[in-house]
Length: 284
Ligand code: GUN
Image (cartoon, rainbow, N blue to C red; front, top):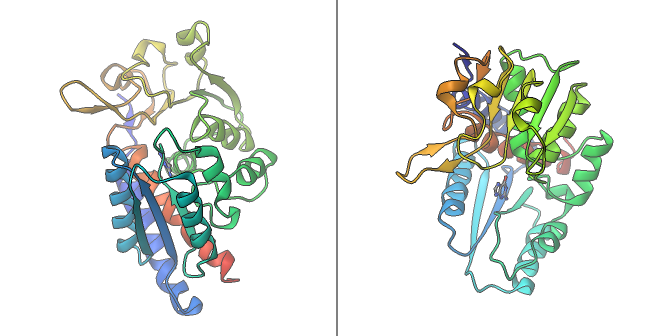
């Protein structure tokens, strides 16, 4: 039976550390760190994510501003909003919640965010720096996975990490972070042949494809560390990951649950990136 990786508890500890660091930094800056979260339209999941981000900011002494635009907002309106947040000195982090309504050009918006305030790490400059191994804002979900693995003592160097998914938000940056820590990395995607056979090579398996219970216990190398980034809603309304938890926990050495695994870490890393931005911008 695998060790359960408790992301909720790890994120709580991380938030406590951030709270302490924020209360130390605020008097030196003469203001609290600030995050602006932009929500466009009425995607129900996005609304929940943004609400949770704003709430977590409050808990950690970070001043948050939620800005809502209607689904009908134009590219120009959204770009002007981003420009004004880029120029606002009280704002250290700007995040535009994805996905955007289909008439908006997502890549153009992400490029518009100042790289110095890009706490999601989605700007091409930050993505490029990650690729080159330079200091940058790292995307929150894979950064949270790395912290979680470190806190549970999961060895990365020299081990074979199999990443399922090649998204810009999770799969690709996850692979880069594992590579930087000297894992041997395989990236799988929808055209990968013999997926179970490839997954079985993994000492570490990170699943981020958005397919409910895709990864079965008998795909895993015994003792593997299994990190489930998926958040899928089943027809009965329940949440489940990309890993079939019940069969996987019998084979894995350590496993994250859904919910309560990677999800809480993502938000904690957003706060951590906002704190980092406030420090850098404030010359601290
Ligand atoms: N949509 C799904 N994940 C994310 C994220 O980490 N940041 C933003 N801004 N939008 C998302």
